[in-house]
Image (cartoon, rainbow, N blue to C red; front, side):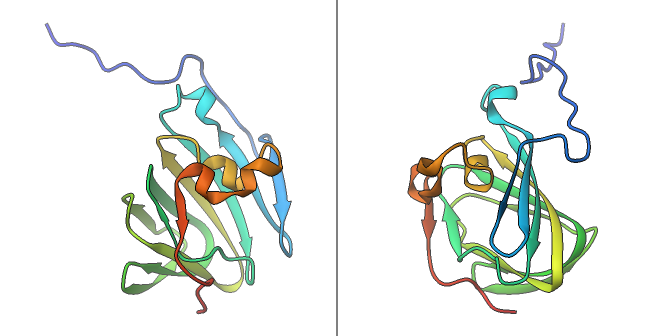
Length: 149
């Protein structure tokens, strides 16, 4: 008899367009929480991130979680370790923890779907309060200035 795979969700989750808690920042950027870690037993979280040119994050390293990014709309230049990669809509990247990375938006705006595993750092995108503004609280190390395209 084979042991079945058990999903980490205890209940189904459906977050329609604009249905998740959304936080605006910078010059019109926003992040919408699609699935919070509390909904997945702490195993993973998903954020839809609309990022405007000029609002890009610093080069940073996650020490706790792996991150995946799917480019829904727009285009970015990704900086991963020592590489610079031009990325178009429809592209997917999986970034393991402890690898420095960042991005710059090509054009005015890009829309990304970000998954974090395990969950926790989704609150850097969609803070619950001012305490979530500190990246070190989530094991995120800032490595330098925001990259430029």
